[in-house]
Image (cartoon, rainbow, N blue to C red; front, top):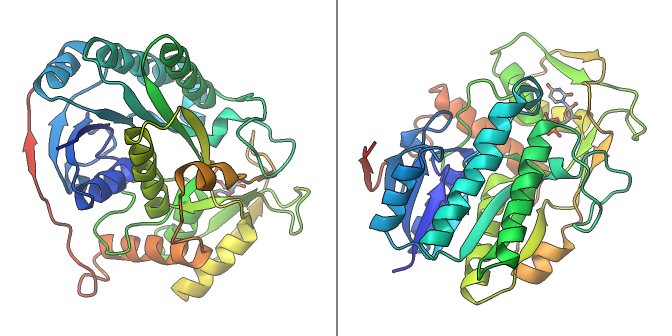
Length: 344
Ligand code: UDP
């Protein structure tokens, strides 16, 4: 059976990919330090608690299992935090990708799928953004990811490694069966903030900027459902297994929604008319970022199923309500398959 190593597989996106890998019959090993992820999110395969900085442990894991492919999620991902703690971001994101590539090199693993970000593009001059526009990240997070992309590309050019680098746009939503979703306590992204207000976890939410050059003055983003994003990883895996050549691919729908549009859908679907405070722009927020998603559909044959803002909001809200214990009767409880081992 084909064995896949998933670093960061206990996190938000990684755990959705692990579940889909399990459904598709893959043998999965998750390597995660559980600093932000949760062991209860790993619904398939074996979870090894470990850190990519611990190269000795990583080598042991590679030596014990024969991986055909590595899917690399493990990373720090907060832009404001990266500005305050840049060295931690370069260490955890860039250096640890180097550690992983060294292991791949020594252990002859020659397929990698890497989770990158639209943050590598920086200030976007023209939408939708294609993969070939120049990358000009404007914060340490984006630069730490771009440097990781370069490591992968340079090493691939000098070896038999083939890669698919996936650049995520705004990821949201939850597994529709209620088994998985985002568990981070301090999620700051828009849909999480609106849902927090709808569930009265806070008294109001804020709109950061109403003077952008967009139709309603608020920022526009391309929101992609986490299940569709997970499917893109399985498509990428099959593509590499069929000897596909290395690719960099945007992951979005090519459809933008403004902050006001998102808030209005959260209000309609939750049935709660929560207070909204209009305030200043957040530093570094661009007006509009949407993906050109033609390449991923063409190269991988990716066919999204949840390309609908209402589905994204609905599954996010259902997950958050489930977490609050409000919807326990109508959704499945999380089930833990497989085993957890502690080898550190
Ligand atoms: N946003 C907002 N209020 C919030 C969170 C976000 O108005 O509480 C806006 C933000 O300024 C941006 C959009 O929503 O225009 C998406 O922001 P998010 O943090 O979700 O993702 P980003 O695109 O910054 O990665």
